[in-house]
Length: 74
Image (cartoon, rainbow, N blue to C red; front, side, top):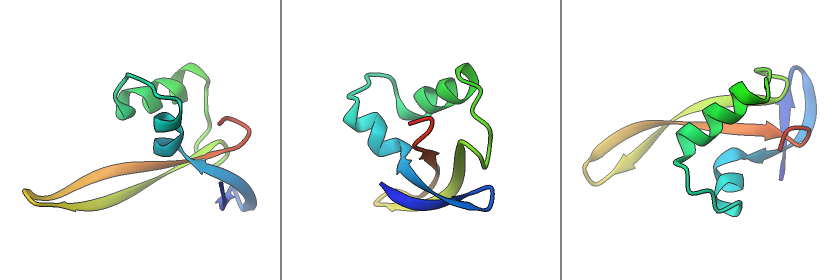
């Protein structure tokens, strides 16, 4: 858990990728998070924020999206 700015308010948040791992979901992360956002009507900057991150790998850099969820929706 960490503090994150959601719509100008500092709230407790969680890393969605870590939550996905904790829940031991068998669905791949990107599908899992996108389905949650749509199915539950999460609102950008209120319920979650997304951050684009460059990840260096042996085969080269790749871009991935990280999500922070407010505790209200986690």
